[in-house]
Image (cartoon, rainbow, N blue to C red):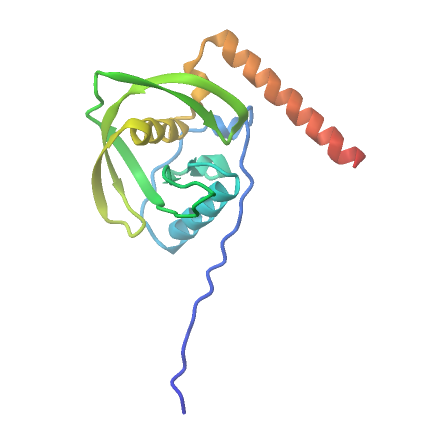
Length: 189
């Protein structure tokens, strides 16, 4: 008799990404009590959803789960296919630099809209990783910008909340119009 070999099939699910002005995106996310299989499954699904979108970062609230979880892969691009995912549970930012940098930001929850946003160019991030181990990293450049962008989601903020009221209103109107147009196309098609 051969020994019984168990293999586990990991089934990842692509989740629906919420878009503004969905009210859940304004929810303040709750901390995760323990990194367990349920949280790891959430992170796996979020990562698959992010790559499918495609994007470089995703907060759990963007897929309807208001928990302090982020997945990110700022080095990934579809052409080379190399993936270097990062997982952040209960991230906390400290030691933000006084020097600022500007990046043009976009967001999977604010499709096809971009704006230059000014943020601290460096910071330190403390978090739990995929296995629940405590980690600390220094972030700078795009990584610093993007972790701050994703952490805004935990506080119920989108990058457009950093813009003037007028610019924000115009972007939200465009999103609502696009959503209505999309739903009309589905009914007709």
